[in-house]
Image (cartoon, rainbow over all chains, first blue to last red; front, side, top):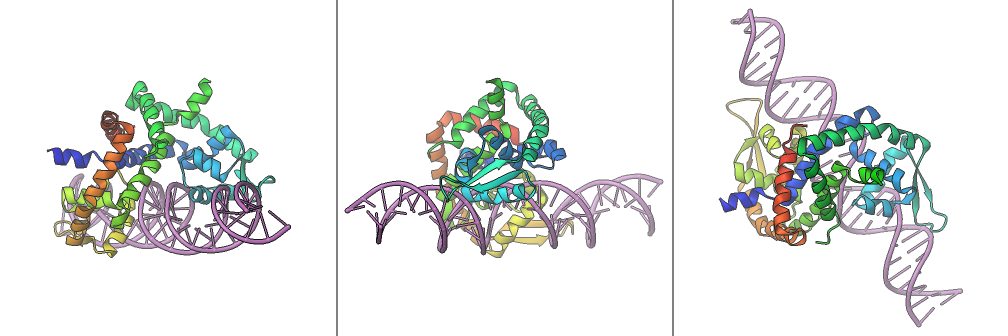
Length: 143
Length: 143
DNA sequence: GACAATTAGGGGCAATTGCCCCTAAAATGC
DNA sequence: GCATTTTAGGGGCAATTGCCCCTAATTGTC
């Protein structure tokens, strides 16, 4: 039994499976915006922190710099974000929401809140809060 | 403040970010096998449950059927799994580990265990256990 | 001021993820 | 037994993820 338990308790698989399941929930709820959860989270983060470089934004999203670079392409093509070379540092590309992007985030927020409520009511409000705290710690841990 | 907290506590983003971070840890540790965490988890699951259909295996992995179909392709090409049409049901394709696949899983297990220990020692043993229980519940929840 | 080391980002590659629609096969209804 | 419905899976599409190596720009050193 210990062997079976040990192999079933893979921390990484558990995280990935839960992330897959919950992403589907949020994707469904956000569908009317034409955005997936990932795209929404990028735009929402940008809305909160203001214009930032790819490097900084990727750090906030616990994401590889090149991943974010790829993800910004379709958002730029749809006119939701604008990229411009920094004036202070020619290497940096500053990413900013366009008015259209800001508008879409605003329209998505109530939908997002609905997904949050659905999650909390299925898992339990306190459990959801606790979970978030642990996850935040995990995401920024130095293994 | 309530606004800022609310927007920073997105359950889905927290899950995805933690999953990204932890996946990197496991990928690094498993690198000597030439497998990523995801591939390893597919093979390990297959090793545990024995030959199964894409449908069933995808269910166990909380994964879309077509996603698993895509992921099996490179594993098949590398000779780690074998796919065969079921004799009982011509629609099903039974997936099974090859000896090479079983061997690779066996070689990966100690590395995987090392990642598990590194995770537990960073997060705390009890916290890691509790986290896994909640994640398992989340992954199989009916939202 | 010139040269080395560091940093920001892109391009290519491959895997990961899930949607849609399609086909084939099985199960169901009559 | 035959028509309908359901189920298993593939193919195509697009986004997601991160690695590597490359270029350009900045910073640090002398």
